[in-house]
Length: 82
Image 1 (cartoon, rainbow, N blue to C red):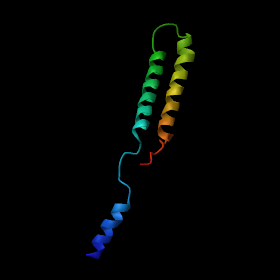
Image 2: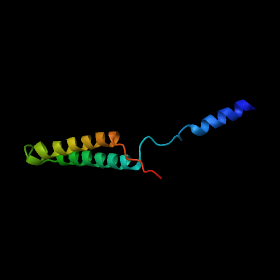
Image 3: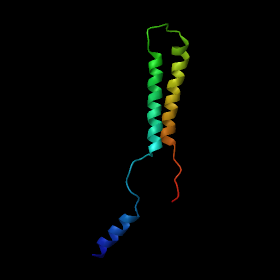
């Protein structure tokens, strides 16, 4: 009987299992996916292959999207003290 009480009291001290990230992390990650998709859309097309959009702008947008993905993973929101 005392073992059951000891086990249940130790379970109360453990943190709850939940999502790995907060809501803001998922929002940033969705923004990064949208940015990468936008960059690839800018690279598409049948127009001039040497245009500024395809050679310079689109790769920069894709790199910014991947950087946002890293930020989404590494960002740790501040906890509010209640």
